[in-house]
Image (cartoon, rainbow, N blue to C red; front, side, top):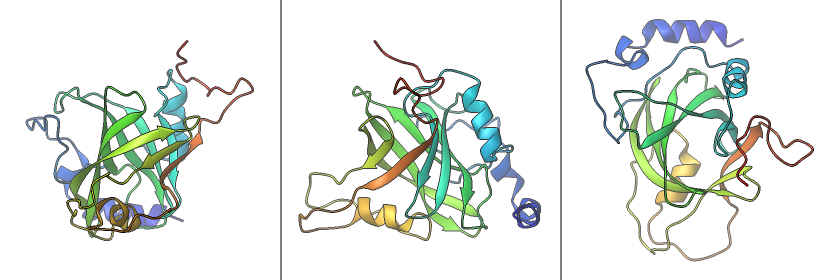
Length: 207
């Protein structure tokens, strides 16, 4: 069902958005416009994950508020600083204008192995994602939730909100607010699942 629109969009998509420019060095900040990578169906993403031991943050995640499914995977590239150890790649979305394989963000580790610095693209211009915004997320519980928490400050910088992940960016960038209990906003891990020993298939275990 998605094949025809994806083929049409691939023909329209600028070549620079699909392939890395080998002469460009991005350092520890993502490029302004998201890249689109080939070979990112759910089956292909699972095969990549199954091929090596995983860190707790790696896997397939669902963002139910926007009906988006992504894979978090390790990557390295001479175009990026080693600080950016993971990328977040779209593998399914209700928005058919977005291609599977679109890199929607990047992740850096911190001194706390359950807290991460994330860059997520916040703007959508047709089939392109633009404007990465930085936020912090926490791996909670048994590692099945990646939760975006509000800052402890009463005022925060407002990202340039757009049509891409609007509920998420409204949550993490809203200006002065009243403290009240709210439902958590974040990603839920759907693969790999816990096994009988309450560990994940191929996931690195720390003793």
